[in-house]
Image 1 (tube, one colour):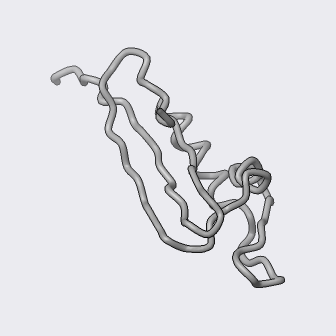
Image 2 (cartoon, helix red, strand yellow):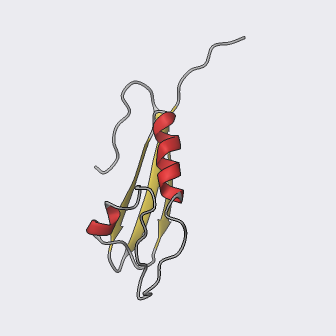
Length: 91
C-alpha cells in the first residue's frame, strides 16, 4: 500500500483525487521541494511560487503526519496527508 502506517496512534487520512493530466514520476520527486515548479499538461508555462506544497509538507511533518502524492500520467493524481490522533490531557 502507498500509505505510511502510523507509529503510535491512529491517524486521519485526508485526500484529494483528480482526473487531470497526471504527474510524471520524475516531477513527483520535485513537488515538495521549495521553489520547485513542474509543467502541467500541454502547457509550456509553470505557475505559482513553488512554495505551497513545501509549506504543507513542513506543517504536516511538524504535526507528526505524512504527506505524499500518487499519480499516473493520463489518469490523474491523489494528493494525501495523514495526521495522528493524539490524546490530549484534560484541564
